[in-house]
Structure formats: structure tokens, C-alpha cells
Image 1 (cartoon, rainbow, N blue to C red):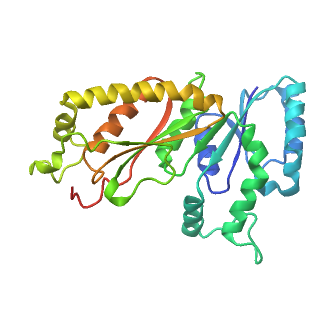
Image 2: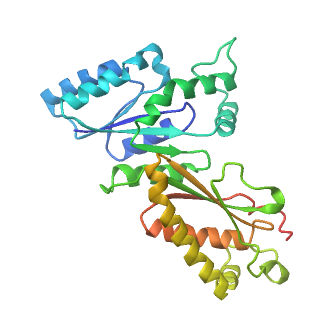
Image 3: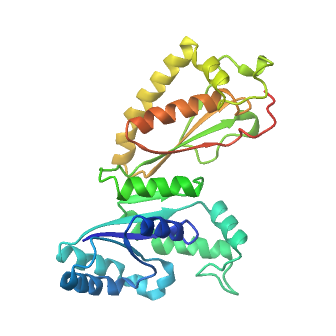
Length: 288
């Protein structure tokens, strides 16, 4: 049996992941009290009914969550192959999702606000998060991206590093991304904005992309940026970092930064790194 234990913040996407995994043919159990996991293993050993199992264990279990680590120890005693996937999201997105769905947080009540419930949940899940094999931050991920990430993790059979790289293009005129670990300024590159035929386009357009990439300084920069990020990745992993946010900015966030972000993202993806990309300001007014 291959057991995948899925946990993490309420509202971070566990339900979506369970649906995606079930579509892949996994046997899925939602909201199982950790104490019952060893009992499930005993039942499996008698029947050998399925090969891939996904179990969601989260804050909804209340005090049962205290049995998480004893249950994990039992899996190790029985030589059960397992991994732990932790779903994360920032407070802003979690609050937004709860307001959109109008659902109550498992820890919120008349005395505990949504913000306080999220903070309390982070504290209660911190030790489990530290033991996770994989951590996915779904804050800026579309459902399709999240499903693809799950498929890569659980179906490809390849080894995956813990670090998730987030590439964010942005415009300096709208401020820098507050959660960036690294920020690179590409305003030194020739600006398509000054060509009236490209002004209303974005770095997603081929003519803009070709214009930005044709310059020698662009190619040199991309090569050096790849070298720097590849140099840093092993050290970030060594220090226990699970998410690296790389901001790439130009003036308006529509032309140069989009082009460079897409190109470096492709390179890193081709180098088998886990990666998502977001163009924060691509839909702004297009002024330089």
C-alpha cells in the first residue's frame, strides 16, 4: 500500500485535491481520526483491497488530532510506505475563500473570529507541517494548476524536491510583492511600451516576446539568473525552506517582466523544479 496523508489549512484546497486524486483511481477517505489509521492498515493487510490510499486528516478532527504522531509511528512499525502532503495558503486568500463560500471555519464561533481561527489553526498544525514531505501553497494557484501539481507528485513516480518556486511578474509602479524572497529589476531592458504597435499588447504576445528576447543583454541576464537560482535552490532546501518567491519587475508589469518570468519559469520547469507562475499586473492599464 502507498498511503498519502493529506492535511493542512482549512480552505487551502484539500477537497479539490481529494477529488483530483479520486479521479486518478486512489481510494480516498476524508476526515479520518488519526487513531483509526493503524486500524485501517490492519484491515488492508487482511484484504489487500487497494494499492493507493489518500487520507485527509485535519483540524476538523478536534482533539483526535493529538493522535496524529502516535498513528504515524504505528505506520513506521508496520513498514507502511507513506508521505504527508500539507496544503498551505496565506491569510488573505483563506479569508477571501471563506467569504466567497460563506462557510464557517472549523475553529470559529461566537467568541473566535475567522482571523483568530486561522491563526490558531496554524499553531495547532505547525508540528505536522514541519514533518510534511511536500508543502503546496495554493494561494496563487488556479484549480487546474493544483490538480496538475498533484498529478505530478502522486502519479509520475519521480522524486520531487520539497521546494516550490513561485515566479511573480509585477510592475514597480504598483509596488513590489510583499512576500518575495528575491526581486529582480528588468527595467534595464529595452521597453516595448515605446513602440506604439506593441503598447497595448503584453509579454504573452509573440511579437512582444520576440522583441524583448532578441537583445543580447536579455539573453545574458536570463543565463545569469538561471545560474543564480540553480545555485541557491539546494541551500534553501538545506535550510528547510519550502517556498521560494521570485519577483521579476518592470515598470508596468505587462511587457518585459512577463516575458522574462515566462522564460525563466520554462527553464526551471524543464530542469524538473516544482513551479507556479503568476503575472500580477498583466491586466492593468498598459501605461509604461
